[in-house]
Image 1 (cartoon, helix red, strand yellow):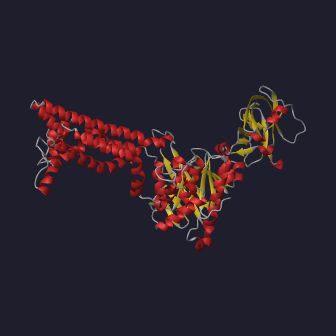
Image 2: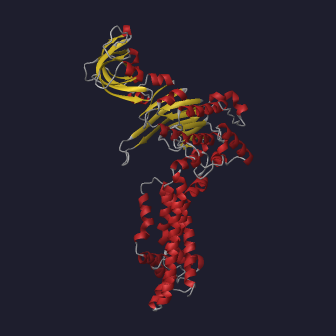
Image 3: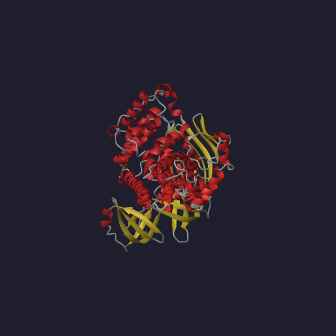
Length: 387
Length: 224
């Protein structure tokens, strides 16, 4: 890990309250349907972002970037309140809205938006124009060092790599010593190693600063690796908040389940509840097949969605007996496709199921297209989702 | 060859194109970034000189600049004379005449800017002026040059408006195109020929600059 040190003048003075920072957002904004975008859209979001990294997670079109734009002051909500510590950034009731330049919030866009006509050094210095020259120079210096781009200072953005651009964009934002940082999928397209190296630098930087960092993403592996807290959004609303494991392990809606990377999603109706066993039986919608799933609140006749990871679907080439797993569906392999180190099987078992197995298993079981197989799903691999 | 009309035309074109840059930048900025629905009205007004016969434009300009016109009366009160048949009147009329040639390249240049760059500038604490000077102008400068050069060339070649508003006063309003017309009327074909050729050469050179510039300048950023 690189040693990161951007020493703001006031750090020692505020060290006691370093972790008390809080960004709270409660906003509404309506987007009426237009010729270009026929569907009307309404944003209605309440969320709190304490110091540290909070992932704002949800499918594309959930309104995540709009939330960031509203926090930064680039879009104006119709109503609501945005506060950062004691400062009111936006107050719909008072018709008060600080200009983006006054909010002391840094924002790294998905496109990064480095100024193409300025060098790396000039980009990093861009937000420091109000400071005395000596202070500018020292902040630029420590910013370039903190993100390991001091060797690129004379280059133009077109002359550096994607990962370097992302580092420069972070440095440019953080040298202004913002009171909150907004990141809109800034690491998209980087490989995992590079991504976590950059996040390490960012975390290290924030150890000293303790500001709220809002990280927008729609990819589930970033949720697990980056966030301390997750706010799950869908269709303009906050659906769920919790730890990464809570959200990814038990997404509350179909779209969040998709975004969380569940390959299988089945719709079903509750036909029998057995609270004493902690399970209930459901029948797949429009089919005769039944599954045993963990119990959840509700009653007989409720509609539920069942999300299942492809990796949790077991495949057998003869009918299994004496298993603890309760759900066994007979079917036939429709296709086999290589997916990185796994093979992805599509199995027609009354419903289409996706299963991930190792290439070794494909060979050992003699799996091939058209072969009859049995899919096995443990009760607790079935994650119930509201529909 | 009498150089006076040529110099006069150059002086007029230079003054008009610089004034148009100053007027055109805020106007184009507004046209490019405003979300007002009635924006098309102003766009149509700006484009009007493209389709209007210069005599029509000249006719209205004459009315406005003359002793009974709005601008004429204002000038009368300030300077003691109306604007019709003066160099100043010619400048004002030419500004309207060449307006689309300045504004449209500017709007195109501003609209092609990545909005997120302007957002980034705002988030990094820059006000509108700083964003304009540090981001918009450096990135849109081929558009700025195009606007100046096109309005210069267009003003250089104007005839109908000058004839209506300025008449044919040597040294004051007799521009190159009027001079050429004059010479043809007087059967001085050799003189008209020389002037025409010169104007042709200048116009061609100017357009070469514009097209060449717009290619070359964008290439380094597009290539990488």
